[in-house]
Amino acid sequence: MLQLYGLYKETGKLKEAEEVIKQLIKLKNDNKYRSLYADDLLNQQRYDEALAVAGEIEKSDPMNVDGLMLKGRIQGLQNKLEDAIETFKMVSFVNENYAPADYERGEIYRNKQTSNARNLSIGKPCRPTPSTPWLNLDWRACQRHKIKPPNTRPFEPRKSPGSGQ
Image 1 (cartoon, rainbow, N blue to C red):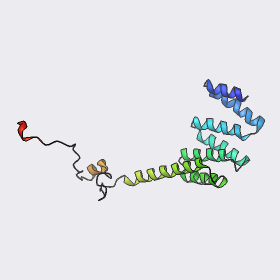
Image 2: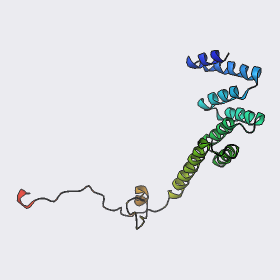
Image 3: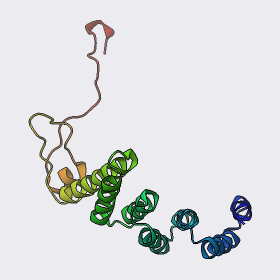
Image 4: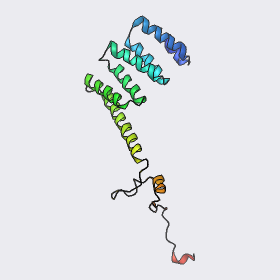
């Protein structure tokens, strides 16, 4: 049946593949089939269903690293960033040397920091810092607050005296 599932996926018959994997889950009651099904749901952006399947994996085996990783990724995609961080911490608790959990948690922190920075810059006037005068400029903010942006014209070479211009 697993070969039939793979064949359906390769040929793009996702509905048939879903039915086969559901049958496999009922017959075998094995988390590896639940993981395959949850990955398929994740790829189809059916996050709520995928999270429910990841929850089933966690319920049957709370120490299953693959199931917890899947749950954390889904939470991150659903923008449940705090929940995702806690889930990846749980993975690190189960297996402290599991680098993918640290990587995913770092990505969540980075996304969280980026979105916070984006939210903070909206509606603020542009004020370059003394150490980086050219880096912290938001040109729309400059226009909105009628602040003249610094001269950023490209370099123009001096005209030589003998060129006649």
